[in-house]
Amino acid sequence: MTDDSAYRMERDALGSLPVPQDAYYGIHTARAKENFAAGGRPANRKLMHAIARVKQAAAKVNGRNHALPQQKVQAILAACEEILDGCLDAHLIVDAYQGGAGTSSNMNVNEVIANRAIELLGGSKGDYSIVHPIDDVNLHQSTNDVYPTALRIAVIPLLRQLAEELASLQEVFQVKEHEYADLLRLGRTQLMDALPILAGQSFGAYAKAAARDRWRLYKAEERLREINIGGTAVGTGMNAPLTYIYTIADELRELTGLGLCRSDFPMDGTQNMDVFVEVSGLLKAAAVNLLKISNDFRLLSSGPAGGIGEYILPAVQAGSSIMPGKVNPVIAEMLGSVAMRVIADDTAVTLAAASGQLELNAFTPVLAEALLESLELLLHGIPLFRERCLSGLKLDEHRCREHVDRSGVLAAATITYLGYDNAAALAKAAAASGRPLEQLLVEGGWMTEKQIQEVLHPLEVTKPGIPGRSGQSGAEHGRRLIPE
Image (cartoon, rainbow, N blue to C red):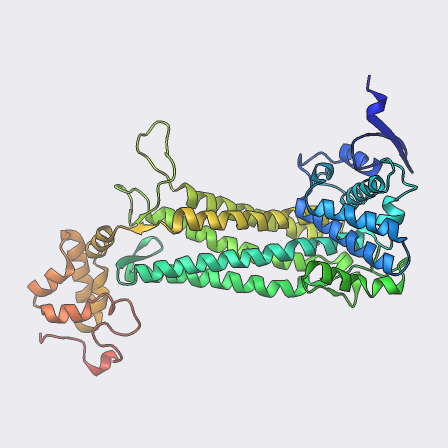
């Protein structure tokens, strides 16, 4: 048997239900708790706090418009602040995976605010004659304009933070670019030896990718600033006074500092979620770049004795319970795992947005969960990779040079002077004998040591133009250095 004193009875249109006496949520949340237990975790805290921010703005506007008495307004505002401070997180319990287009999350916040406001006014939880979760806290609102607006408020600060993390990542790549600006490394295409490159150039390419991702996120914020609050259920604004409709976005802009503006056609923001698909797609683009980088790091650090072994990643933990001394590229693997999850989340966002019907999208909650998860994963994963892997990365300079020498790829720099067939024969001979190409060039009388220094200098073989003849075309100096 249950202790009746530990519960209070609340009623809704479906009947009565016991609610824990100490719970700030009410019957709508209690029903949602029973109905939605698939995910096993509550809806994203940042989203729930953003909903409270919308309630705060609505209370302020409704108070100014004399739609709510100031006593209620002040109690509601105080309760909102407690939610925003995280003091009431334990009562925001609705599961992340829910039906109803976010109604359960909206009602969860409404009830927590109402019951806390009731307490602040000297009443007991559940006495909604003092402050009502719908008539007062949700006044002139609908889940359908609150939820998409709150999601934008939750996403924009995370986008800004992520842009800064990408900027920091770009900076460290640029540091590595300068650190290894003079180190020759074997470039590979399709995993096969190709042409020599400077190790710093690899990091420069990574820096450019990070810069693009950063720029994309800055641009994405523009469309997120347009909010449909005031549109109520289907975007027409029914049951909300014009004095509320035309000022609520201004109040939210003031409270959040996010540059929000009222949509000139709220029905669009109520039913269409393509803006979030766009943002998720940009996160996926960043994840694709990060996954490629993580795979490069794993490959170039492989071995080290039996693999490429050019990159030396910081050892952060033991790699095996049976193989002593083994160290794995776990931070690069972590980054790759984060990227994979972001790519998967993008599929969820896409399907959720495409599954909306007519004037509303019932799947916005799963879209919100996937999008916010992607942002938070990247916000945590990128600095970990930057600090625990990239910053401490070293290159084995001897190994890099050895691979260049053994590969014969420097022979490509001699094509203009020796012809393709001769250069190919020399490359093959160098690879077969394991001897440096320079020795074969001198011994065969193809080039002098001075000419080799000019043609095969690292800066000559890694920049545009013909090695040894910067700024000239092959026609200007012929095909051979030495008479046949």
